Length: 376
Image 1: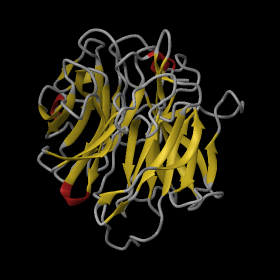
Image 2: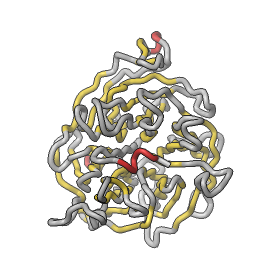
Image 3: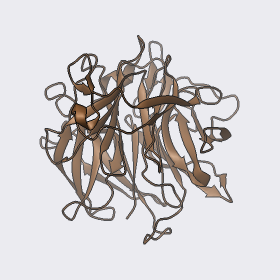
């Protein structure tokens, strides 16, 4: 279980990635409904994206199945197929800290609810800047040539932040995957997205780095100096000093804690802010356009969550529907954080470009922190 997230005060985190903008792709049916994947209670669940939102448990937590795995964080689907299966990445921390938490690589068979089967084929495990208790695995993404990106949250409450952005090099069907670190000082590191120019966007939910950052390559092609990985971090792991890091979207109203970022139609971006229950839309250049989701006027966090939820992970399908993982933050006597089974997964559809009120796909969930959109 992601223990440290349950005791957050104001630093909560999210991440996401989609490799293509919504609106269709060559050879794909834009009207075919997507499948939404979500990790909650350390299980991996899948939902049809249209009502009545039929559900399947794809991976069961180790606590309920001795052969199960503990799954969480963002789910990212590799482009194309590998040996006849669709591969995906998800946070996997079964038995942490021995073995340490990381990101599992899974082969997925099946195309519809009731037929999915997932098999672990590899794992990404880096060194972390702080203790394992603070090193929450979360984000995932891809560069165009197939290199994998991840972020881990780092210390979530104190200090300047030690979350990491890492690039990983194939092959990935192993537990010994080579990598190079890009940044090791992100405060409450969150969501990843990658644009068509291979620029990498990462959300940071806490000062001093709060906002959405844009990283511009060239990115390392190996973990050696000749591959652009020219340095080492404090743990002795390979690291680059050659990647540019710019502030892309500063944190301000309505974006209090930038947590996740995904491509939006019209070449823009959706960004979630979990603590104040907001999803906002920005232009391709990072300019605020409009607020897609916010709590109704007069609502405040208390013993129950916002009626519209607290969106952490987000995802968009080819048709432009927006999905979010609501972790169900509440305020109790001693803690601000996810309540007991107060989480939901929700969908926002658009009519003539205008967002409709969110529809609940599943409720009573335990820390549903990430979204993955599976396009068939």
